[in-house]
Structures are given as structure tokens and as C-alpha cells.
Length: 212
Image (cartoon, rainbow, N blue to C red; front, top):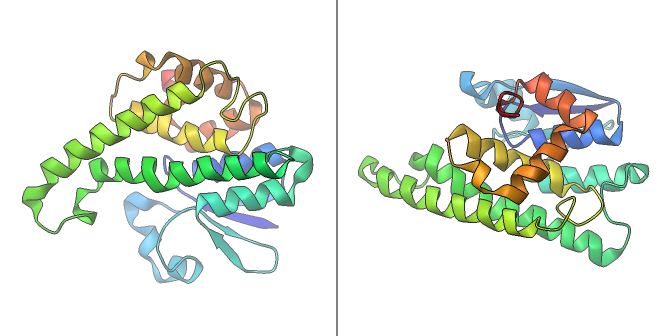
């Protein structure tokens, strides 16, 4: 059986939702980041980087990073149609996940964990301000991408959708004016109507259920 190591409110929610959407048999193991469980010796044997998500496969090997895990799940469970069937469509989906991972997520980290980017505490206010600006601009870009679309890649739900939901929740967490992003907000409401999404949000006690 697959085992997902996750933490409520973290980006691991994307892989958590994808597993539910795929209908895959899996065990969800909570790693409490707030308690520092990601830095324990036991967890570092699973992911030496001390981060979530991590997905342990049936053979005992481990995948890390959302983009890799989501792509694996899409290909492992093709009947779930989590990835486009055509090569170019799949590549565009992976490209969007890479952008979410490489740009949108780090922008938020500058707000929440500025000490990761500068040892000088005096730099923290500038890092937070730049991060907030970049994160909000990224959310606006997502809002533009979903205009006229049901899902992030068009008419079909893909692995990009659970990943993009992470950042809507993070925007709510830091009290950005998310409802101004009307297309992104309408998309979020459609996401919350999906049973698999709702199950994960309930399991993680996600802020989006309170905001719905």
C-alpha cells in the first residue's frame, strides 16, 4: 500500500487530494511540522530534506516533491485521468506544477520563513514585503489563467488543480483579499464541491472549509 507523509495546511495537501481523487488505497501518516516532527531521526530516514510530502511506494522506495508525486499518481492510475492523455497536454500540466513549486511556493516562504533566505534578522521585513508582493501577483496570474475555464488546464480536472488549491488557502491564511480574484474564487468553490477534495479538507481541518 502507498503511504503519504503529510502535514495539515502544508503543500502536501496537493498530493493528499490526488490520492483521494485517484481512488488509490493509501495510508496517510501525519507529520506535525509545528512540533518539529519533520526533523526527527525517523522521518529523516524517509526524507532527508525534512519536508512533506513524501510518498512511500509498495517496494519501500520514497518519492518526494509534489510535482514528482503528482505526475507519478497520474501515470500510475491512468483511469483517474489526472493527467492529460496527449503528450503536449501532459507537458503543459507538468510545466504549471513546476511553476507552482518553483515560484509561487517560494514567494510565500519569503513571507512565512524569511530566515531561510537571510541570516540577518534586519532583512526580514524587506523579504516579507517582497514575498507578499510576488505571492499576490502570482495569485492574480492564477486568477487570469482560470478565466473561462472550469479547471486549471481547461475542461478536465488535472493534478494542477489540487496544487493550485494549496495557494488559495495560503492566501486566506494571511488575509489577502482573495474574493477580489473572482475567477480563482469561483474555481475554488467548484473544487470544494468535489467529494475527494472535501474529504481531505475535513481530514486536515483546512481553513477553506471555514471560508466556504
